[in-house]
Image 1 (tube, helix red, strand yellow):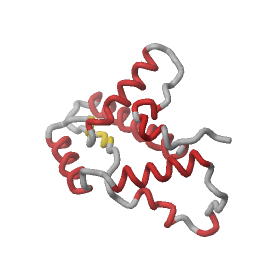
Image 2 (spheres, rainbow, N blue to C red):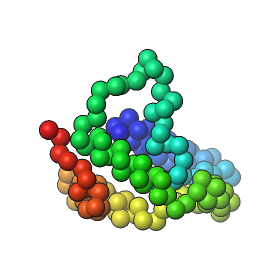
Image 3 (cartoon, rainbow, N blue to C red):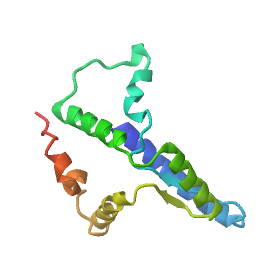
Image 4 (cartoon, one colour):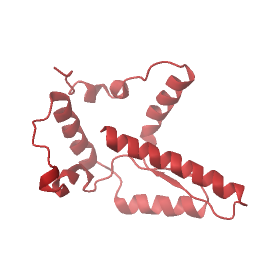
Length: 141
């Protein structure tokens, strides 16, 4: 998840910088940042496209297997379609809204991260807000 999460944060930083750069040159152009949660697409099965030479056939750890099960369950239970996300995105662009949040239920996680930063404390376990998921994840052994 590290590479995936790092790339998502890079996109956030790049898009925020682009927004400010565009404002600095007059603000005639803008940009929006799409922040989707779980949408039923093929992302949970992205491993299927990995070239054979780059496959890692090592068995998953208990925590990796639990995370994989949770990802598949979350993506498949998505209540918003890719077409819905597109409509939300076009609406945000038309109204010049920067943040496009597809699932308001993710906001408690956003608030928790900001609270950790403001309190200068160590990051809170992201699964602490989802005890039903945390119960499935076993510690590394």
